[in-house]
Image 1 (cartoon, rainbow, N blue to C red):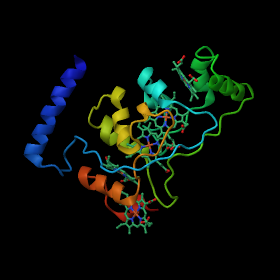
Image 2: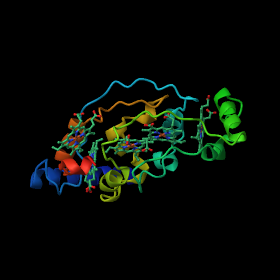
Image 3: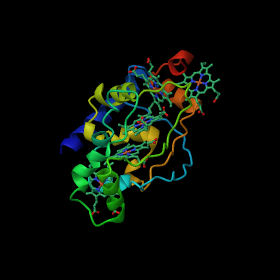
Image 4: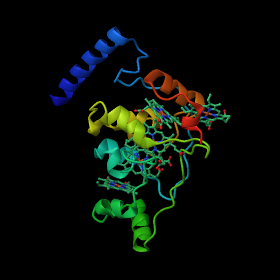
Length: 190
Ligand code: HEC
Ligand code: HEC
Ligand code: HEC
Ligand code: HEC
Ligand code: HEC
C-alpha cells in the first residue's frame, strides 16, 4: 500500500515536472537514468560472492554491506566479520562458506579483486550521487538498489559482480547534462 502510494505520487510528480519544466531541467528532482551498456566479464574472485542470493532472495540492502556509499568517495567492501555475523550459523555446510570461515579463523579477509576501476586522474564520489538521487528527494532507502543500478546494473541478478555500464567520460557527461551535474573539466579531473 505504501509502495503503491509512492508510485502514484512519483508518477504524478514526473508528469508535473515534464509539463512545467521540460526534460532537461536542473530543478527536476526525478532522475533521468543514463543509457549505454558494457559487456562485463566475470572477474575471478577468491570466493564467488552471489549478490543475487543476498539481495534478491534475502532482501539485504546494498548499503548494509557497502556502508560508506552514503558518506564518502568509496562504497566499501564489507569486512569478513560482517559476513560471519550470519555465516557462523547460516549455510555452514557449504564449501564456499567453509572457505570463508577459514579466512576468518586465520584473521584474514578474501582479497576481492576490483570490478570497477576508473583511471587515477578521474575524481568520483559516491556520496554526492547518493545524496542527490536518494536523500535529497526522499527516495525510499529500501529501493536504493535501483539508484546503484544506474551505474552498476542489476547486481540483484548477478551470481558474480560484473561491470555492465560503460563508466567512460561520454557516459558520465551525458548523465550530468540530463540531470544537472557539473560539466567543468576540473570537477572530474584533478
Ligand atoms: C552481504 C553483503 C553484500 C550486499 C548485500 C551487497 N554487496 Fe556488493 N559486494 C559485496 C562483496 C563481498 C563484494 C566483493 C566481491 C565481488 O566483487 O564480487 C561486492 C562487490 C560489489 C561491487 C563490485 C565492486 C568493485 O570491485 O567494483 C559492486 C558494484 C557492488 N558490490 C554493488 C552492490 C549493490 C548495488 C548491492 C545491492 C543491489 C550490493 N552490492 C549488495 C557484498 C555485498
Ligand atoms: C544478513 C545475513 C548475511 C550476511 C551478512 C551475509 N550472508 Fe551470505 N548468505 C546469507 C544467506 C541467508 C544465504 C543463503 C543460504 C542458503 O541458501 O542456505 C547466503 C549464502 C551465501 C553464499 C552461497 C553459499 C552456497 O554455496 O550456497 C556465499 C558464498 C555467501 N553467502 C558469502 C557471504 C559473504 C562473503 C558475506 C560477507 C561479504 C556474506 N555472505 C554475508 C546471509 C548472509
Ligand atoms: C553515479 C554512478 C554511481 C552510483 C549511483 C553508484 N556507484 Fe558505485 N561506483 C561508481 C564508479 C564510477 C565506481 C568506480 C570508482 C573508482 O574506480 O574510483 C564505483 C565503485 C563501486 C564499488 C567498488 C569500490 C568502492 O567504491 O568501494 C562498490 C562496492 C560500489 N561502487 C557500490 C555501489 C553501491 C552499493 C551503490 C548504491 C548505494 C553505488 N555503488 C552507486 C559509480 C556509481
Ligand atoms: C545518474 C546520473 C549520473 C551519472 C551516471 C554520473 N553522475 Fe556525477 N553527478 C550527477 C549529478 C546530478 C551531480 C550533481 C549532484 C549535486 O550537486 O547535488 C553529480 C555530481 C558529480 C560530482 C561532484 C562535483 C562537485 O561539485 O564536487 C562529480 C565529481 C561527479 N559527479 C563525477 C562523475 C563521474 C566521474 C561519473 C562517471 C564515472 C559520474 N559523475 C556519473 C549525476 C550523475
Ligand atoms: C562528468 C565527469 C567528467 C567531466 C566533466 C570531464 N571528464 Fe574527462 N574523463 C572522465 C572519465 C570518467 C574519463 C575516463 C574514461 C575512461 O576510462 O574510459 C575521462 C577521460 C579523459 C581524458 C583521457 C582520454 C580519454 O578520452 O579517455 C581526457 C584527455 C579528458 N577526460 C579530458 C577532459 C576535458 C578536457 C574535459 C572538459 C571539457 C573533461 N575531460 C570533462 C570524466 C569526465
